[in-house]
Image 1 (cartoon, rainbow, N blue to C red):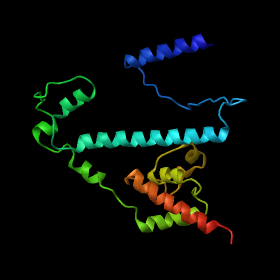
Image 2 (cartoon, rainbow, N blue to C red):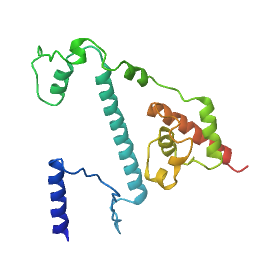
Image 3 (cartoon, rainbow, N blue to C red):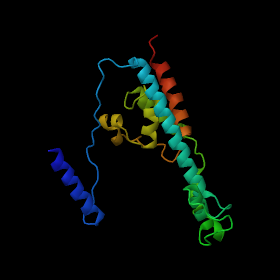
Image 4 (cartoon, one colour):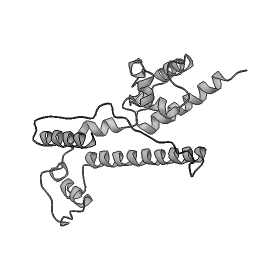
Length: 198
């Protein structure tokens, strides 16, 4: 069965390389095996994994910021030369392509820099979100999940709870992640205090 599957995958890859079909992953399932006697206690393992995922998220955010900064800069070295240097194809310091936006002295996309400006969440919208949280329509136990919900970013839990159909899904789209995360952390704290028994 494994050999048949491998042959089928190889045939599909060949057809895709020839431009005859387009394939995409669907219903991917990750499988995990729980060790009966883990080397690290489960609470410590959970802490380590959480720290690793937070680090990875921060690294990804920095990479995206670097890419956006690269494409919104309007002066400095030739963009083609900068890319060549970045990927270890060293170009002569005097070399310039003469056709990129930096060489031509024009903005690549004037609107991109404008869209990058930090947009503070609207207080009226945050109040709507707080009320929805108090009505248990949206999660208030996980500020990261709430941030993803507000930015319109999917996750397995968002899909499972069918939150993409909620009218507030993606309400903070266009807001920088750290700004949205800070607002959601504050809201989660307020709702937690509101729900505490007297």
